Image (cartoon, rainbow, N blue to C red; front, side, top):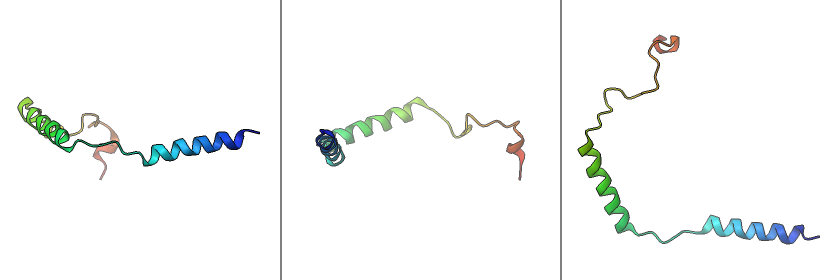
Length: 65
């Protein structure tokens, strides 16, 4: 005995976690995103030249068409 009570408790906790939505401060989120956008352009991180750092140009599959 006791497994039913344990399962019910786990089900209740899982349901609480599934439907829990913390309050969202949208203005703080907007400020954070704007500050990140401003920092990214100032760094000068140009990844357009080498889009895939892990690509192996010498691999046989790289030249297959």
